[in-house]
Image (cartoon, rainbow, N blue to C red):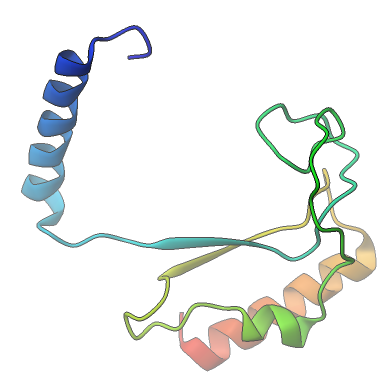
Length: 114
């Protein structure tokens, strides 16, 4: 794919579009990725702007509260996303961060009936 010409790539994109339409129609699924915590990540993921291996001016903030996470959840009414992906910029959340994430997930599921 990376070494394909633009013409070849357009053929591939057209084929994937036909496959998608065949199985899913014209519907799309929107996923929203939002940080629950940002900056100063100890991991070394080369693709991530928060990685310790890159020098970017990423805003740093601590783990959001459960209320803030819930407030940032996409609504299931078609105006936002249909899935929420939260990133906590670490290999694993601390015990208190995990408790916050679980609390937020409980309320998101309950409020938005996901």
